[in-house]
Picture 1 (tube, rainbow, N blue to C red):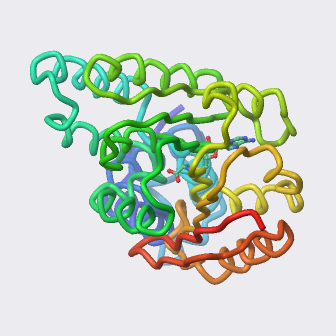
Picture 2 (picture 1 turned 180 degrees about the vertical axis):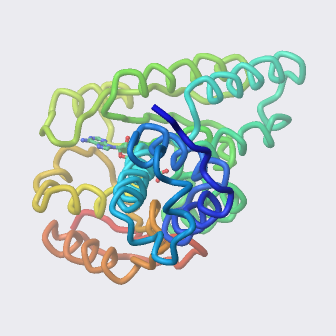
Length: 306
Ligand SMILES: C[S@@+](CC[C@H](N)C(=O)[O-])C[C@H]1O[C@@H](n2cnc3c(N)ncnc32)[C@H](O)[C@@H]1O
């Protein structure tokens, strides 16, 4: 097979097309495009010839490559953790070393921010976490126990809560996520008064066993605050009705719900759609909406069970 190089202009135009729509770095967009292009034999054999033509963008093989690239980019972004696992592990071991050297959680704020930025959901809050929690706790009061449902990397933000003593429980639906979380909790045990544990919880199932384990951890009491950040719209979009009965599985007094203002994958405003889903959720679950807070990238709804 005779393969040609892809002219720089074609690569650049394609990267621009991807960047226009998706929240991804230029380097990553190029990587995804080239990967798909190299896979397509017909594209590689004819790209030079076709690149001379005016209607290159309409060429069938090119459209196939772009379509597949966009699909790959979308699925990559949907994974939430948008850095390769090795990079996350590297950063975590940097944190381990820094903590050993500094001896205090507060002295590793920057590394915590870098870890938070490795998950698409917490990335948006990295610079505003302190304000985020301050405003929420002004309404709920300073909690002694926090339950973070489907927390992603949000557990790396515990130190921004500025709580002296805290019992924190995080849940995630994949075993490896929970293991990573518990590794972090084990690490910070020596450097803080935070007692924390990660739980495996797949929200597609109504798992009341986990509810009991959570209550056991908190000596039989409901948690003061539960976070369900950027979760309800994600679940409802994936499958309508999938949040039915969810509230009963969450033992907490205050329920803090939130929605993204912009799509996490596409450059698209979605606040309106998402707020509609949350309002519906609040109504259907007879929740009392105490306060709505409008942050830069996220809208938070502080609710209580009625
Ligand atoms: C949009 S992210 C929000 C993460 C975090 N709450 C935050 O705001 O930083 C949605 C989270 O839901 C989790 N998730 C996806 N499917 C799930 C399921 N079936 N059960 C429980 N959690 C799930 C993902 O792992 C991801 O961390």
